[in-house]
Length: 372
Image (tube, rainbow, N blue to C red):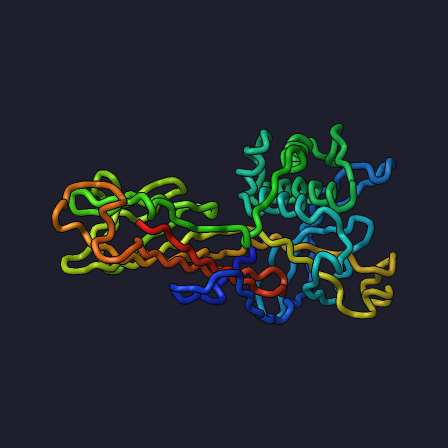
């Protein structure tokens, strides 16, 4: 069974006016929790230890079909001690409500594991080998099992056995699953929170005018490449090429349209990060053990959706620029602008962050510039 990745574009809640009063602005955005029905397909049986005792478990391929959708999306178990109730619907909850530990580590596993990384690519990046005789579904099964094992390591303190970790895994599954597991549990990093992403600009105070253009200005971004566009002029690289996208630390120069003294530069950095969205059973029958597919423990297994969320960090800068008429080819910030006491730059950034029905947060920043 092929499980699709849940990809939902994340639109900015607001792009604020160019001139801001400063300080953070918080915007509320209510959203209905996603509900859906869980599915399970046979996977690999893994050998491991829990609380110092042998604890073998099936890493079945779990999915969630949201109500109103025909697609099934990849989810993982975050509750190894509890069987899955496939007869009761699930609704999106929050991490605190789930009582599951180590959110940051689990998010790292989802960020670095399957399906956010392709099955074959994950196995090979982990140092494992893909058996050429495996079908695509079998490759996905191995990648899923290694990722699920790593999730359980952090949520339930379960350990995958290094010796014969897959029951019957004699076609290379042993080595590949173990490689993925070790890759995702050793030296785990931290998935950045989208609210930490910033796109900014440096160089306004020191910019000069030479050979018909202003600059240089330096892009600062921890959200990846920044797509740039301009109204009222064009942006150039040092060699005169037109600017399209710049990385953190790269520079651009401004060339005004003839007769213009103002230009607006807009930048957008796009990101794609997984959000660990927790799903919990919704019915009393499921929680009491009276569901059609009875849960022996009287509780329903908790699930987490490995969902990549797309988002953008927009920024805008407005410049009032006048080229010196008496010394058109000299550089230096003191030459700018001809009229006015400062190189006026207004910065506006809007970012909406939606994590499992939580509030959207919009951050605004105003940058005040020194007088030239």
